[in-house]
Amino acid sequence: MDKIHIRGLHLRTRIGFHEWEQDREQDVVVDLTIHHDQRAAAASDDPKDTVDYAVLRDEVVAYAAQHQHGLLEALAEHIAALVLAHDGVEAVDVCVDKLAALRFADSVAVEIHRP
Image (cartoon, rainbow, N blue to C red):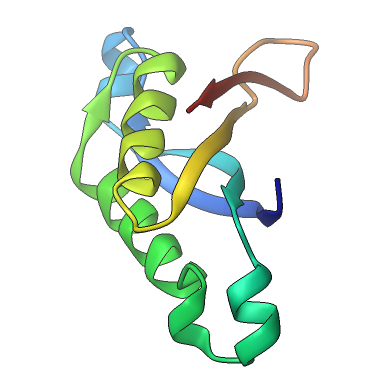
């Protein structure tokens, strides 16, 4: 299956269960792998034959800014649903990386695959 990658999408969102986490936005980085047949787009060279990744980016950024989650897993699941709602998307891999989540670690990440 062909893939479109959006890597290193930096978001600000409210995530976590601790009170101090819920009171402020935190940085997360999202990587998306969108499984989509690209043959029609390659043949036509027409953007209508592929996934508009700028629209996807905007939807993910807006969702993260407007919603709060306790778990990275929940945020990843909702992002996956946004992507899967687009025509022709057959599956998606979502990795959500919470920066500075643990002392002595650069980050903690959750990765999911949804068909």
